[in-house]
Length: 160
Length: 101
Image (cartoon, rainbow over all chains, first blue to last red; front, side, top):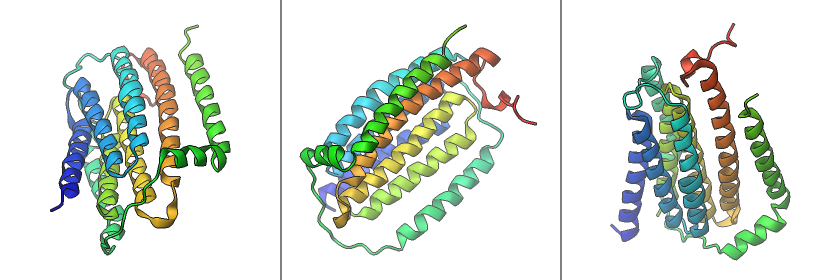
């Protein structure tokens, strides 16, 4: 049992614990905090995958910006029972559907054979070079998408 | 670490997100479950970038784009949810059925 397997087990247990907390807690504020746990743990998974810059970006954007915006959204759509919300009536169907989906997705994965491979290391220099040569057009389009989303959010949220 | 562990983690996170989208009534909770789905896909993409020899660094670039688009979509979706809340004074998606036949 190498150290890497132990660390992976701990971090993925945190990810799944946070995810189950998001979908099943009765307190809306707690659900947001469980989401924060999940997002930070996913950053840990990225570090295990030798993608340190991505882990930093994940913590900054998801853990920093999106969590704050989420709390604002929860505050502004304040419901009477903030701490005891109900789920929809489709909950049993949802459980069945997600289990079926899990078996459908995971079956081809489980038939793979395990071989010891070495991990592909990549540097931030490679990432930057690829982003600005091979993926330049999607990069510019992504900034356009951000601009459109910004303007759209202002227009949709305007009071008039 | 084998690729298969990251694939299985990504599949389980995806299915938990799907359950959350189907089972939650409050719109912001559905949005949180969508974020779980996006994170699951990101884990899968980055795992392929690291564990497959010929894949290059494409998975990490895909992950950057997913994070960017997810952030934009999150803000816009919250603006729409605030509109919905102004209309019907709660954010329950069960009652947002005025456009159904």
